[in-house]
Image (cartoon, rainbow, N blue to C red; front, top):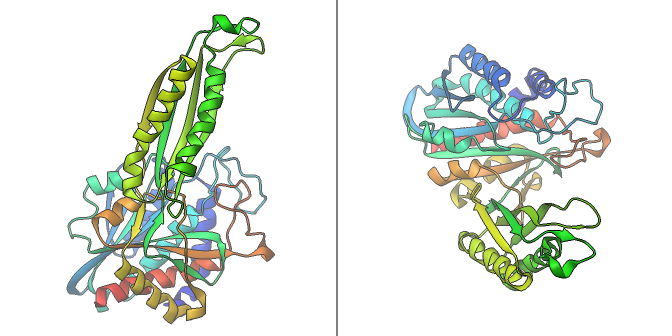
Length: 388
């Protein structure tokens, strides 16, 4: 598969650059999904459209067997692109700053590789081209629309490019690999007034300052130091001018956790501190806790299978068992809740090509030499799964 993928590299680099030049946001991937669906149909793969812009391809093997699903996300980010490349975004304010253009091209390449050997397949392969991973989330709508059934999916594999590993390496981790991602909105209500007469007011700016500091004690003093959690206040909005005491402040933030029990406890912990601060500073409050993606939990058996596949293709020295999970989120987690799953990291860092900027950066780019490697690893892992 690696040799064949290398032969096909230019074709799928061209697809990646086309997608990069025409980025589309979540649930707006009309052009991208249309290209994907047309390509799959050209390979003789059954295509189903669902969840607005999602595409599911089904490749039926010549013999009965299990079904494995392979997933790629298609959406871009609302980030103005700042690096100059020949395939720079033509859509103002939109950019493929997280490699989803590469994921889409890679999975199209996997479909090509596996369609060439379909007469040898014992079982089925589903290709999940998912919208809106960056938000509001396309995996759950796909599951609700039946993507994991007819035929039932027995295992699922995902992959994400990144510059934290060099091109030619694969990273993986059994157990939790990505954090659960929740959002908070806190509105403080006080009594406005003149800045020269604070005793006549209830100052929400002062309360907000104390609240931001107090919230940090959840991680530093309530969570096991060997565990992981993040409470970040990302925005604070309030006030009118320098000599006016604000009657209202709105704070928003994100909460990241790996342990489901810790995640379940976070709303109570946060609200307890909000209430305490507001009681101290005579404010009222409104607190909204929105649950986002759960933590990605990689199945140990699937991790072992993918590791063996990648070692066979790339050599043991190029397959890395990462020690620590990412505190970033991934809605691949929903697929991995429904079937044993593994989410792989595809190394695509290369300082010589200026592929060093992290995801969500306006200069993000990845080494396209990783594309055939990703194609081969996913295709071979699917075959190995079906042979079990």
